[in-house]
Image 1: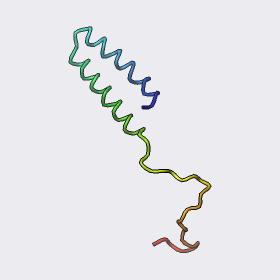
Image 2 (image 1 turned 45 degrees about the vertical axis):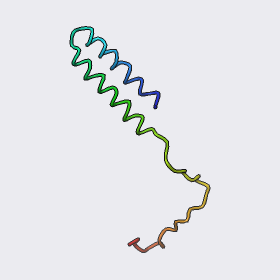
Image 3 (image 1 turned 30 degrees about the vertical axis):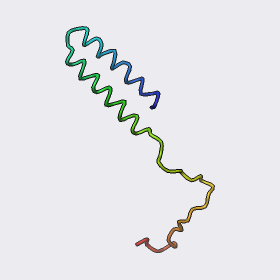
Image 4 (image 1 turned 180 degrees about the vertical axis):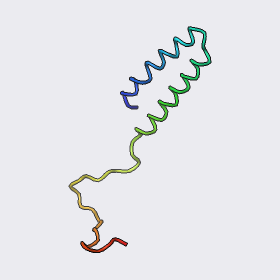
Length: 72
């Protein structure tokens, strides 16, 4: 999880708590559901890659097409 998501999540949880305390509990629950979805999406986008990324110094097997010719 990206630690910078806390800049979004903590204020939203504070707002949800104030809404629940103020009598608008259904709006607070909606905000909490939004926070949970936000954390899930953030965790999904920051997951580790399922493969190794080659270093820039390694030689690739790909050879580009010769200059002056189209690739298709």
